[in-house]
Length: 222
Ligand SMILES: Cc1cc2nc3c(=O)[nH]c(=O)nc-3n(C[C@H](O)[C@H](O)[C@H](O)COP(=O)(O)O)c2cc1C
Image (cartoon, rainbow, N blue to C red; front, side, top):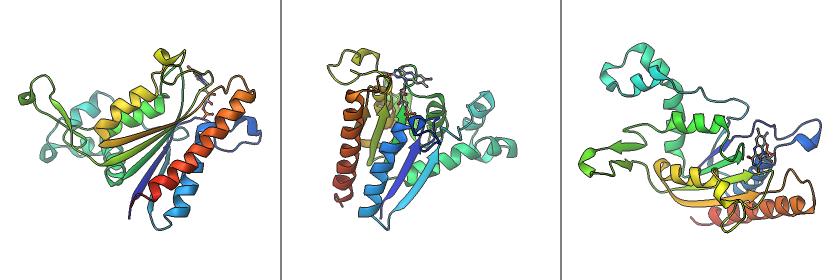
């Protein structure tokens, strides 16, 4: 039995009274989940909408608590890390991680960065050892698959595209994925939202198709 962890990061809801305001990235991610669930009816599913319920930003007390050995942590420090512990537990259970994210200001939205900051923990997601020389950080988790679903207003953010050099969303999350234990990375993108033209309709249709196909493919891997 596999566990799918699904994180939605758009601050827009999946459905709104005016459908023009619906989150595109959430819709594409839901297509993946629907296909995944129809092929894996007994699998575990963990869901968080961090766009609507953002994790707290980390602060100095949080860092202090993380670097205090477990047997010396105060009650207050344990409380401070409760959300991080919960998010880490959800991550560590996951075999497949589905993250849907809009592009905001050429990168990830603040709630998603807050989630990464909360979940990445020394001696939990990674170890740090200067005996490794100039590469002291090593992931402690392994074997996970990450599917990143993105929606952008502009276009050309993919390999060879005219805005590839401005894409700090997919490449950033791919880099971080290694420290979540990700060994297999897939990205499904939708572009042109701000143009609202045929290119946009085609891009969303392709993303929905690819999300369904990938879910079927991954579901049949075991
Ligand atoms: C605050 C904000 C910043 C944005 N910044 C960018 C950007 O840098 N590049 C881009 O292509 N689109 C940008 N957009 C457009 C969104 O990426 C686009 O509307 C996308 O569809 C949002 O995802 P969603 O439909 O899942 O909510 C921005 C939108 C907002 C609200």
